[in-house]
Image (cartoon, rainbow over all chains, first blue to last red; front, top):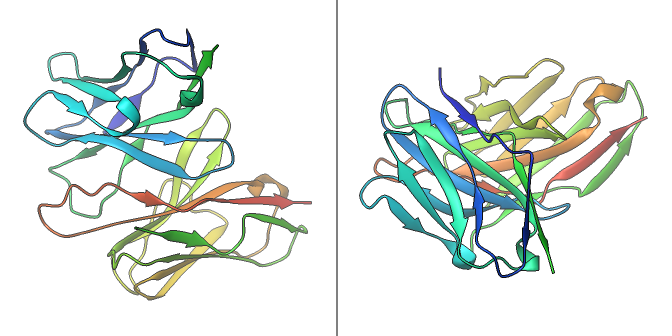
Length: 116
Length: 115
């Protein structure tokens, strides 16, 4: 069965420091991987995706994520955190071997708190 | 600019009422989804649709039904609202074209309170 795990409920970092939000996945075939961000009382916004190719993927707002097949991970990173990055972050996966219904499996979410 | 809209941002209903949540997308997407979001539980898929008049149950369909009469519109129906259906409801859509990476685009959400 497909699954996604975000092992940390909350991540706290100081403004200007690098941040990492962790995600691991389990699929039977090769994955499509996604990160979304949700600001308070808003819908989810797409940040970035890994489909194939370069393991380091760059996305919106200076975020990037590294696909690691051997560790089945797709951690979200940013070199220098901003207070405005404080939000709820979701990792999601789709097995590209599955039918093209577009279903994604979402992790439980990680709250990122960036302090001034 | 891609857009998914939901009929209400906030909704308060009484137990036993029939509730309609509407979602419209303007991207000509084939796939549409309804999720509910609760603290600590992440996003849980209620129903999805991959074509007009087609629907499939997600992980938590009990107490809900859906309707997709037109490609751009996907409705979630609570036949008889209960207090345990108080939640944030999120609609999303994605393309079904071959070779497209299928990221989902989300609406702003409807916060439903059932009293």
